[in-house]
Image (cartoon, rainbow, N blue to C red):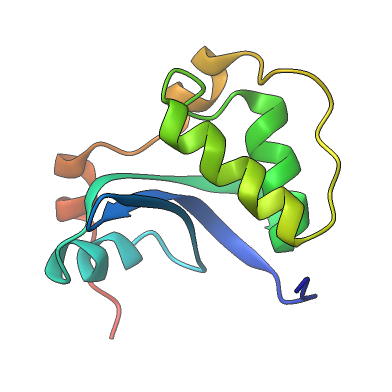
Length: 113
């Protein structure tokens, strides 16, 4: 199920009680997620464009939302689907948390049509 398509922005959202990793090339994607009823949305700009497997490893290694069990599970599912092995528990949650955009910051971002 792996793909070579690359993304510049990644994060998570919850829809109907299911948390999944989301991918985009622009942070304005969050407005679409909100419009469609997603909650607990957290997106980050990636250090470089990455494939889904690379994103899973990056999120795990930086401890992206490691305090949330649903996010840790979603990242593990993504890694499994993309045949990426994650070593040990997620680390450094403060690093990833400091980069996540707040809902106010997202809403201030101009929409890209």
